[in-house]
Structure formats: C-alpha cells, structure tokens
Amino acid sequence: MATKISFEASLQKLEAVVEQLESGSLPLDQALKVFSDGVKQADSCRQSLRKVELQVEQLLQQDDGTLQREPFDVE
Image (cartoon, rainbow, N blue to C red; front, side, top):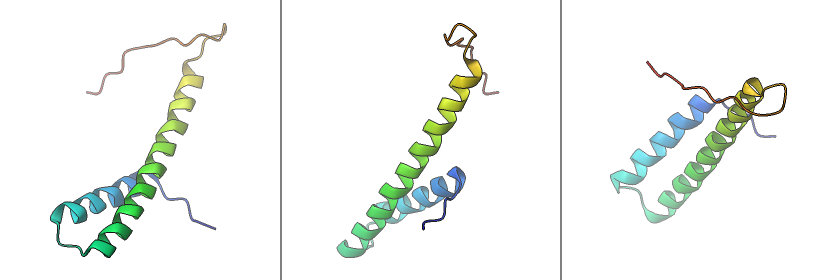
C-alpha cells in the first residue's frame, strides 16, 4: 500500500524532477524513470488541490445551494 505524502512534499519532489530533467545529464532510461515519477507527483498534487477546492466550495456554499464568490487577497 502506497503511503500518502503531503502536497508540499509532492511539489518539492516534482520540482526536483524538473531540475533533473532540465539538466540534460540523465541517460535516457533514467530520464524516463524520473519523468514517470514526476507524472505521479504532478497527479498527486492535482488530486490534493482538487480535494481542497471542493472543501472551499463547500465552505462557501449558501443555504440555497449557490456559491458565494469572494475576492481572495494574497497579501
């Protein structure tokens, strides 16, 4: 059974994969393995973000079922 890692850990691994692939120093077979891991990390990040998005939508849902959109200030 695979262990679930945090979004931040997956993102960090994905960034490492990008760096390795961009370096151009990996042999083709190893680059393919690294790329495959990157795809898995990207999918994990996408799933985590979708889960959080659904939670936020639930929190913003009004009594009548509509969503109340509010500006998000990143400062």
